[in-house]
Amino acid sequence: MKKIFNTILILSIISLGANYAQAKKSKPVEEELVAKKDQEIQIIEPEKEVKVNRKKEIKKLNEHVRSKLKSSKEAEGMYETKFPVINSKIEYADVNGEVTLADCIKLAISHHPAIMSSISNAEIYKSRIGQAWSNYFPTLNAGVSYSRNDMLMTMGGAYSRMMSQKYNMFYVPTLSANMLLFDFGKTKAAADSAKRTYESSRYDAETSIETVIYNVKVAYYNMVFAKIQKSVYEETVKDYELQLKQARAYYEIGKKAKIDVTYAEYNLGKANLNLIKAKNTLELAAVELANAVGIPEMTEVILKDSLNTKAYDVNFTDLIQIAEASRPSLLASKKMMDAAELNVRSSKRAFTPDIGAFGQYQHGGRQMDADNGYQFGVELAYSNLNLMLLKKQVDEATATYRKYAADYEKARQDVYLEVKSAYINLLNSHDSINVSKLALQQAKEQQYQAFRRYQVGLGDAIEFKDSENTYLNAQLDYYSTLLQYNINAAELERVIGAPIRESDKDL
Image (cartoon, rainbow, N blue to C red):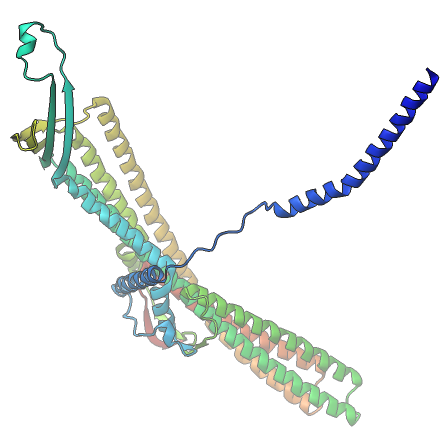
């Protein structure tokens, strides 16, 4: 018994060892299989290559070009109804690096997506006018039916044997038409309301055009100012270079201390840093102008025009009258109020019936040409008559009209405020130009005297630096005020929706 137990124990140990060795041997194989499986699994499948249909793409591109050309012509016509004719015929392909403000306006009208979007949106509302009038067009229906009827036999005996057949089969092609003759003005009121909404969308398109043009003017003037600012800093660098040269000469002959040379080197370094910032500002202004025009690639341009230096002849009373007659957003609000008023009329006429004509022709029977029939007539009908619903629809239309009337009054008050603010800002910038111009003249004289004193050895570096900074700031203040005057003039044109007249008087 003991021998048997020992034998079984020995066999069990041998079996366990063999299983352990087999498991240890198969573990790397399993890990290799799992790693290989992980490599094969892809969380995101790669997209399949889609073959480009060149003919379809070319057709789509040509259609886009035609649509763009049509929209640009329409936008230019809308702009020129109130503003001067754009005397530029430039295209982006013809840009040779030099552009005027008129060129930028022309390019913006032809390329800016906001203008294309607003004009296309107006076309959407234009199509709804025709949709409203379509109620008076006939409605055609055509169809073919086949039916087989298993007749219920309620008679028996001899009567049932007298029946020719149990089943009846019919082939019935049908053509019918319905046409509205008169609906007591419901369709006309709906069409008139759609027309007012379309006219409002046209004024919204004009607002979009004038906003884009305003942004172009602001970006153009800012780039002109950035160019002037760069020139001012370049002149400042030249002055400090000359002062450094003078300081070194005085130091070499022992007339000035070393600190003057060090101070001049510091001033020159700071002036060069300001010049670098001015160059970066000019590059950024070019990018902003390209974005305002709607052509992001148009960054390497040279501006032909400068800031306007002519005074504007404006009168607040005349400006308010022009704004009430020309401001697109105000006119759009009025058209929406008119559309809401017509919608009230349309909802009240929903209580009236419709007078229409109908006709139908059928040809068929047990055979395709077995028989034919027709019917026609005139009907007086109420459709979906629900007095409670109609009453509440009238209440809704009335409340909507009151809302749009209040919106129009709010828009009129906002226009008054905007025109008043723009007018005051223009006058303030106009008055500031004379003050800044006088300060510039005085600073220039002071800088010249300080430089001459330093040249002959009577002045010091601090006096020269103070006069140079004063002259620098005076130049920037003057051109900044002139820039603001041009921007305020563009803002005034935007808020009244019409151009303002220049005088022959120089600022």
